[in-house]
Image (cartoon, rainbow, N blue to C red):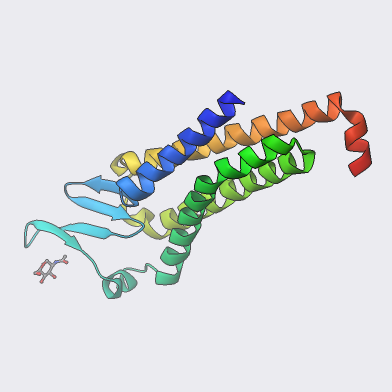
Length: 174
Ligand SMILES: *[C@@H]1O[C@H](CO)[C@@H](O)[C@H](O)[C@H]1NC(C)=O
């Protein structure tokens, strides 16, 4: 249980860092800043970072609905992470198996929307980003994914352990 709390807290901390502290910027270099809210490239003429507006991005083949959807998915995952501890505490007090199933479902939904949002973002921007450009925000989101996977594995193991040790309780439900 303690390990579970640490993972959940780590997960939330990584998401807060990437999406609020780094303001959703997955690339944050002196000459390039690309994230869920910014798209800035170096302008050699003026010698400064130039943040492009949507009409420019459209010309470059970036779709606004795609970016907005990516943003919504990733920030929705953050909202889930904020309320997740409250939900888990509630389930732990009542010790209900159905609650653990719900936790597993929530974790899987988080994993799907985060990967979906990140995937959509990368699909739209991959042309302007090199692998070596990624900074802290991106690494934090990758870390979040890894922790989510760990939480999903833990919850699955806990559920099968419960099924093995309390078979009668499971029989009633199924
Ligand atoms: C750089 O900035 C200048 C002046 O604002 C602008 O005319 C030019 O189009 C910009 N170059 C690029 C590549 O965006």
